[in-house]
Image 1 (spheres, helix red, strand yellow):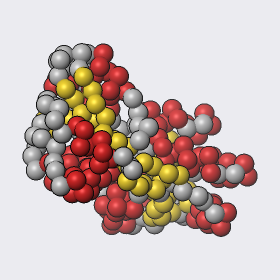
Image 2 (tube, helix red, strand yellow):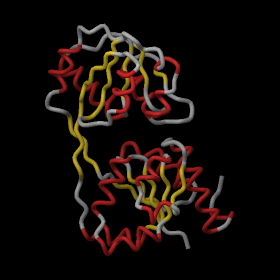
Image 3 (cartoon, helix red, strand yellow):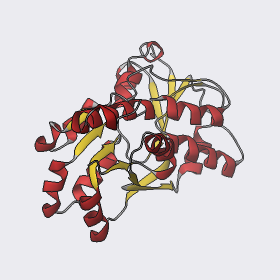
Image 4 (cartoon, helix red, strand yellow):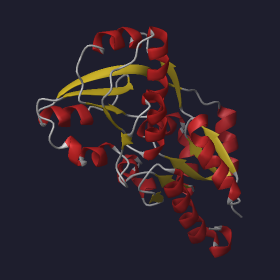
Length: 257
């Protein structure tokens, strides 16, 4: 008998995915291993960046768009018009609302590597680029753009803090969950670190749905063979991967299209 699927994602970002999985008959639990807070220096950073004639900007996440909007509202000023990019369609929609303009993202490979393959990010020599992100984010985008000749500036608008897991919650998951869905390396890292040694056998019994090959490679070796790669963090891709797992485990009748 199918148990529950645990989604490791912030509640506001998990809601569309959770709703659609429930429509397919899934039992779903949601938890975020990360709490997000505004950066103490975001407004000061924003004020310093207003005079730079940016060609383009990248917002790395929905959180980046949300906390940029808060910082602009607090300052009473907005960044000048520029070409905006994001890693995927979910963040692109959130960014478009904030910047009141179009946002470009990769069609299928929804990650930094896919974004860097877009033509506008190939010929950037001499251009001023802005990356809106959380504190201590990945350096791949900036390093690659700088290597291609761009001048890159950061605007750190939020910071992430790990949440604590109680032993009761972990015990409940061990009894109820047989599938874990994750689309963030940070969520995955904090989750694995929080599971005690006596919970490792549960992790090995679970099926895993991950958004990318990169996330699969971050799993302990013993779990990688139990992971299905969705190829994207969009609800559509993750649900397709979940259906694939259900068909494999429980037969065609358990995964309705």
